[in-house]
Amino acid sequence: METFHLLLAQYSRSGDNPGNQMMLILVVSMVVIMLGMTIFFFSRYKKCPADKILVIYGKTGKGRSSKCMHGGATFIWPVLQAYELLDLTPIRLEINAKHKMSNGSTIKSPVKCTVGISTDSGVMVNAAERLSGLDSEETTNLAKDIIESSINHIVDRTESISNNTQKVTFIESIEARIQEEIRVIGLRVISFDLRLQLNDS
Image 1 (cartoon, rainbow, N blue to C red):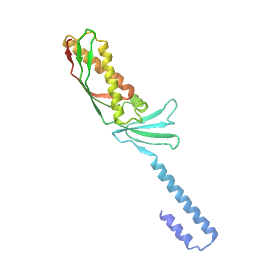
Image 2 (cartoon, helix red, strand yellow; image 1 turned 30 degrees about the vertical axis):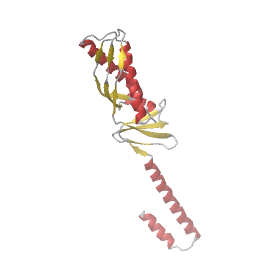
Image 3 (tube, one colour; image 1 turned 90 degrees about the horizontal axis):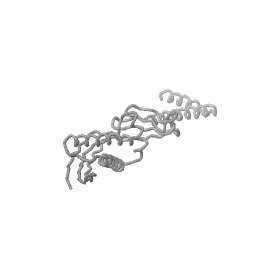
Image 4 (cartoon, one colour; image 1 turned 90 degrees about the vertical axis):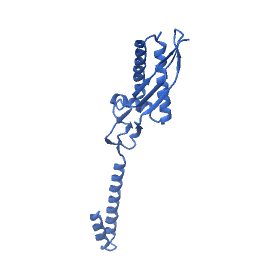
């Protein structure tokens, strides 16, 4: 900028020579263009906060619909790419439901579960595809639907629960099913608590 001011002062002392005026205009134009390009470049350089996932869409590589980053920074190409940030804040869920088993008994399976977007490289892409554009309430409802469906899946395949061993196996099967299904939308189970209650009809 000091050089620019010196040039400006020099051309100001040169009078009204048309050639000098054209040169001044050219110098000013070049400085303005360079400054604009610098500002534009830095505006497209995006940093990913520790509590977010940066999802880049558009031209991200052959056979890829998006690219995900957890931490770090990258340049987002104008026109060719767009980006979105996904929140890693854990989601706490409470689900209370009754289920009828094939032997006629009823079970209650109140679940307290905490889930969040996975930072595993193989699962983040699922979150980019399934959770982008959803608000926190929509994400919560989607997670609840998957958990309830997972519980129903295990209940439908369980004939009876008559002892502690079967109860432990039942709870472990539900947790494993939830872990498997929740990954499909890019989430992971952070904590899981199910207190099974059996009631004979």
